[in-house]
Image (tube, rainbow, N blue to C red; front, side):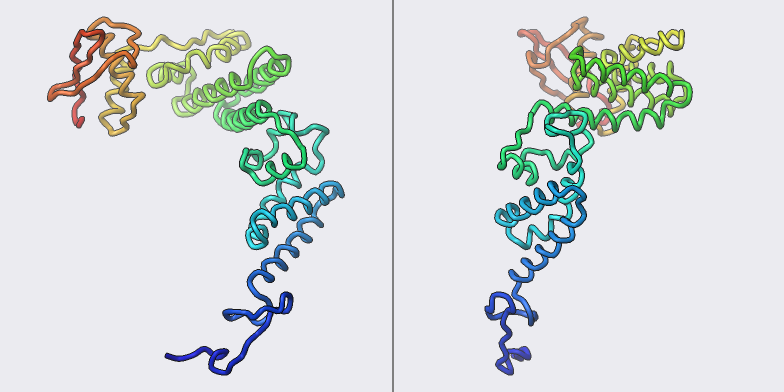
Length: 312
């Protein structure tokens, strides 16, 4: 067995900082002292990037806290990322942590309950409102959805989109609606204009959604009504065609896109079409499979439903 150069010649190097023997190939600093120096160096570089002295001090204190929690090596590895958060809040308004519209401009990952910047701020007495954080998260989704909507709505509808959602956000500010409601609406409108971009016409898009996603009717109602008022054109979310909806569900199940939601809707529609049973609550039934289909038991009555080709 061959020895390394150090062992063969009895050479020992000592850390220039802590003066402990150094293992491995290093000659100047041990691993811990190297991490401390790197952490300090990055702290100085990041701190120099802040234009607000108060934020610079807050960041330095945060790094001291972080280093005590995770150690200098991990602190050095992650502090550049955390510096982005402190840059984002260095010119924040008073009580920014409760300002939903300001919070929505900050990366939500920094505001999670387990996030190190949030844990530090809470440790020094900065309170966070859980409801405000949830609404800010919804607002970020709304803004993302609006970006997609503007890309897909075309010139015909672009002038209606922004005023509608501006008005909805004003209603939120005045307490007339919830941010969650607006988020659900924006997601539904995004789906609508994705279909418009693909199919070319809004009436075709609405028909397609009535078949594939009939649950969007409620979320789209207010927006569709606003289009009627502004364009003097009759738009409506069509009544879902039961047979077309069933054909869509069978196609999804045949193609291997099985989900409990699709299967539940398939069972409900089959009960409606074959046995005139409407609004069946799936929690109140038991389903067993035989070689030809499904047996559904409801209040001690059994109903047979067909399966779809290629099912297991």
